[in-house]
Each structure stands twice: as structure tokens, then as C-alpha cells.
Length: 232
Image (cartoon, rainbow, N blue to C red; front, top):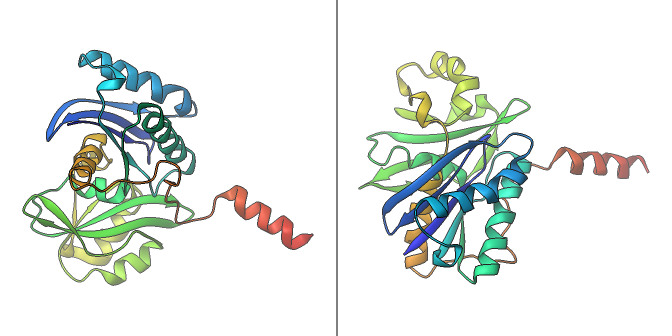
């Protein structure tokens, strides 16, 4: 089964193609301000490079966040558009789960953290189980101090949130805090596709029309509208 993975929750976006559990190709991109213009051409380029047409894709897995508002929205919209036009199933995957799969055999708790700005992080806890992931907590938005308060055992921290809060975590948790190498701090489209294909094989899929990004926080535009409403 050929599955296309799309990951755009951070500035280091990626797309990947897998055949069953074999990663055939993966491309990383700096999404930047023109992410909406870059994504589809890169998907088309990757398909050509591995000798496939769009019509060969049998399923799509897309990271639905949490993460960057704009980037996640573009990734989800692209996945939905392709799924609808090709008539193939689509499945949404948490970007925090995608991150955690960078450590499929970790002997410790895995804490995925994505910098949410404004002094907060998106986080979720997982445990490795024979190469798969067992979710311990739901995706949530917290302040780093709140995150620190729930850590009770050795934990591997992974994600760009470690770039902002590594020293705080290290100073507060001491030997309980372990950190990934920088190259593993970004979610990969191949992981997204691998998680997605397992769900698709079980008959699990999302409705192409109702699939939506998981933001966990209102956008600045929404907050501004609410403030204007209060003033009015």
C-alpha cells in the first residue's frame, strides 16, 4: 500500500512516500513564508523521483498539529484536496505522536514538546511498546513549569521545545531529564505515514470534509476578533 505522509507542524516541514512499512523517499523543506506555494510542487517532485503518479497513492496521512497555525492549516488543506481529488482515504495524526516515534524503542517515558511561543509548549507523554507507542497523556498546552511538575521518572524530551527550555528542564529535573540529539527534534513525514498506514490497514480513516487542524489555542486573529466584540 502506497501512503503519502505530510508533516508541516513546524518550520522544518517534510513529505514522504512509504510502501507498506518501507520508506521509499522523504524530503525536508524549510516552509518559510511561502509554504503554501512549496508543498504541492515538492510532493509532485517526490512522486516523479520514485517513479509514481498521483494516482498510485492509496492513502494519505497528515500531521494535524498542534504546531504552527499557518503551516498546519496548509498541510491539512493540501492533504484533504489530494484525498478528495484522488478518491483515497486520509487520516490525521498528532504531530506530538509523530515526534515521539523518533524513539520507537526508548526505555523511558517520551515527552514530545513543541514550542507554542508566548511562554507555553504543546506536549504529550508516550511510552515505547515493542516499537509502537502507548499514549500516556493527551495533547495539551501548558507552561514549562506545569510540565515540570508532572514528570516523576526519567523522561526523554524531544521536539523544538527543548531548544527553548532545555536549561530550565535540566536545572529543574536533574537526572530525570534526558534529551534527544538535535536531528531528532523535528517530526518526520515518514513517521506520520507509518502511523497512518497502520490505522488505514485497520480501516480507520477520517472524513475528508470534517478533518481539521488541532490547534489547542485560539489564533491571534480569533483573539483580536473576540476583543473587538467585547469592545463593541
